[in-house]
Length: 181
Image 1 (cartoon, rainbow, N blue to C red):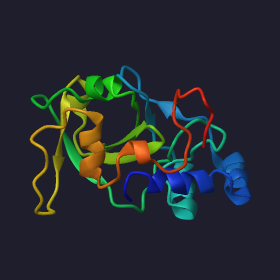
Image 2: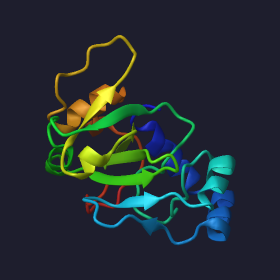
Image 3: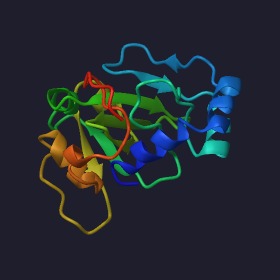
Image 4: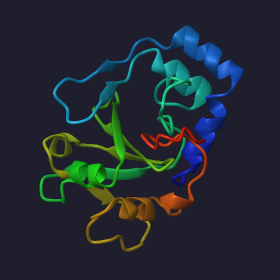
């Protein structure tokens, strides 16, 4: 999934009557980790239903303001927390991005970054350095050279394979105040 496909898929799924009914039946109030610099949900047993039926790692409120849900059956960037990489959260905040995490059963963290109606997910096997204020080093085997550092939000969109976020697809952007879809 390139950046934007998740936003488009979520824009459709959140309107689906069957998803809304299933969310009402199965989605419990989410539990969150304490002491993290951004919201980190803990994946629940009910979330396994969302995975089997909707290809989501967890239930997402169809009336919430998320640009994208945590999709599980899509290609995802792989990363590892790094104490020496540029601090990621400050860079994302400066770019106006919203960040949320989902803790998987194996301890990995799916980091979802949303901005300007776009979303990208990064699976981070060891998120401890990131949660302590560090950065993320992206890992891949594509044979392509990545930027030496992800120094701005546009670099993250470029690496994820999506178009410029200003040319986004659907979804509701956080904090734009215009309520556009």
